[in-house]
Image 1 (cartoon, one colour):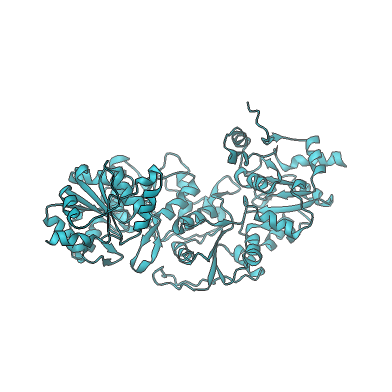
Image 2 (spheres, helix red, strand yellow):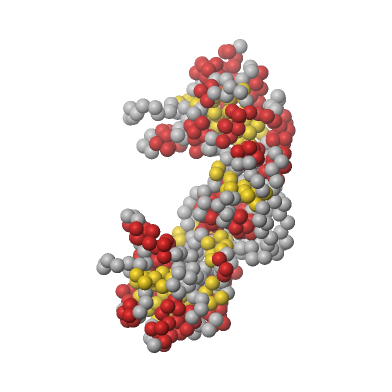
Length: 310
Length: 306
């Protein structure tokens, strides 16, 4: 029993409540994995929801920490899975936003050392941000490898080719306090479609933070930067007019909270209703930020609300 | 416990302190050697301490050598040392699994050949040492085949550390009955010339985060290594001194185990670091303030030679 003011609703809504929300909001920010698709399979009804929102003239954006694909690839995936009319400009991935940050915010003068996948390097190329082309000999070690002096930033993202040598090199670069330390995101693990999980970039970033004694600047959710990217590229994106829809309490809901957006948890992904309820009973104020305003079983629950609107 | 801390150990004080102890525990990296170079005078200090009737043991978090290899390295540098005097975390982790965890089963090992050797020497089988690069598609990695005999994940220093290893460890640790042990959590391994290599702490953190579990740590500042020395060699903790270069491992260990503590300035931490802890009001940080400090362990030579 809590009479505290300002606690989030954390309540499941359907039908007319959703209709009210759809009328009130002009912008919808969707996480991808676990919200609109699972791996290569669209969540039933999701394409219909997204297509309808776009047709109705709502601003629809996709905000994902998944740094493994360039935005171009995402456009193809959207198309493949039945989400028509999604343009590259609507897609905000942590790799794209990291490139934007390096180019426009940090205005990095020098090269970037990337611990990450091709998707990240692709976005850096697109943004004309120079990065180090590593060509280490197979038997190179930290004692004998090349350490260029024009590295002015280290960017850590998802890297399935992560090695001790990369960790050691990055630590050397980061000894220079003027060398930036960025991470695409700090997710500790990612789910695969069959319920298994894989280590996330958060693990690699944490290892490097321990090695250097420095904290990374996180680009992706829950940090605000991706929202700032959106509002700098599109006019009139007022937080009060936005709804953030996601499946991960500690990432998506916190992101929404950090940016002043109302939040909706969909139960088709990582977090469960019980976890949301536990956070809402928590006395720690930082855990209140994980609590969603609204909850739906799936975003397909929007569909009946559309019919009422028509 | 009497007031003064962080006192320079020199002159007459050296005799006073050494007379009050029977055993001296030395850390290795940054104390008696740096990389492959001995700290000048170190061998003489060790040998003279023994001549003066002191028991000398070595307690190192570095898991990359077996105690045999450590003894050999020390021999090459002129230290008069036996294998039984050396307690590295490779050996102590094997001891921990055998005597504390009563471990039966296989280990998934992220670590060195030395750690593998020490485990095998106590009859524990392992899998995983050496290079392990990613192959196949992403969906294969989560379905990576798990050895059903593996009942523990052990993480030590590993130059072949890779994403795939974090993945495998995480998959094993999904089973809550699988043990999770780490040799130590040092953040850096210091080398000659001021270079440092990321330490085991980085690797442990990566696996802990992926698995969302905490490892049981064997090395300093956990007291197990001192228990190891005590159970094998006998040790009167009230007449024992710990000499190290890291406040968060060596000095913390000494304080936790009731030993006298000496910081040497030839390694990771500076006098300013120690004084900062001393000036803080925090009880946890006070544990990292040494009783004494020396510029180098060679500072003990004038007394030992005289």
